[in-house]
Image (tube, rainbow, N blue to C red):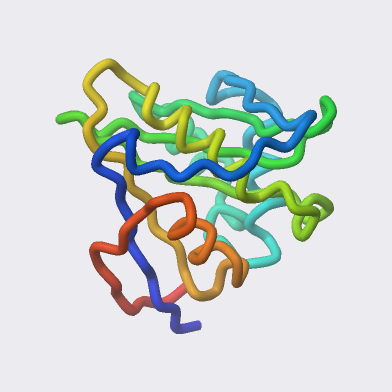
Length: 163
């Protein structure tokens, strides 16, 4: 299936345009090998046919064991509502490799603030972070790209590919 992939970036924490807070929504650091990371990511990505929703045990083990991987659960009133994970690439670069909400929280008005929390955590992935970036696809939720732009991300590249 053909997709258009949009790559986005922020070059300063001051670029963040936060969404209004949602009472009860929080971000909780968990180890990459937490038993919640894989199933939450699969639940987020399955409706959009993310490749990670089809990975083998070995693929997951390799992904989660990468040096510099950090994970944050997005919780709403103590329930897991979503997840963000990050990969530090060195030279002050942090990629948000996963961000999303599980299906039962999509469309509930919490995505903007959940993304705000995820971005704030990305800027705290190390003392020298100077760039936070990510990519999204036109096959992802239709509100994903507009939400990234509203939070202050700028598009720096668009590519075509296959999912």
